[in-house]
Amino acid sequence: MENMDKKYHFKEVKEPHLGNLILGSKTVEGRLYEPFSVWTEIKIGDYLVMFPNRYNMCINCHMFEVIGLYRADTFADLYRIFGEKLLPGIKTVDDCINLYYTVGYNDSCTIKEYIEKRKNDEKKYGVIGVEVKYLRPYSIQM
Image (cartoon, rainbow, N blue to C red; front, side):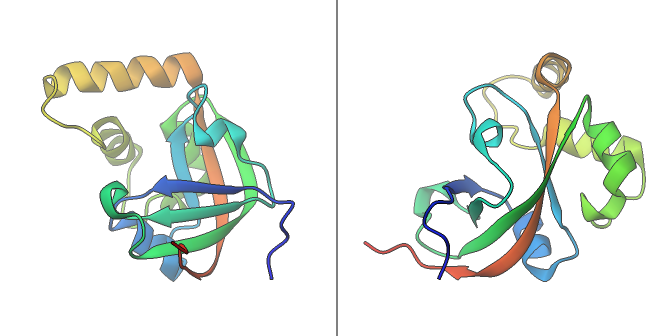
């Protein structure tokens, strides 16, 4: 049984990234280190429950233990440290940056505006790499 003193954090992670975390080919989740986000509250030893769809988070949840936290100035810096443990299949820093600058894009603005916002947020807040160890599927009790 998990230690109840540890915090549980719930976060959406899209495929194929969630599947790669479960398989262990990806061991580090990279995110902007934005104020008031889950990513600024996580501590080593906490549990991270990840799911692929925020609209139905009761399905396909998986539990991970946080085993490392790494702050960096940019996604490129994180990639230089972790390489494919951050993004399996991504072979270059440029491909890493392109992925991180476009992830989460929707049609609320132009892609150019979205990328500029992501670049500005990265410069303003920095990024975090959250190293995790897969524990098991997680069931949310209703």
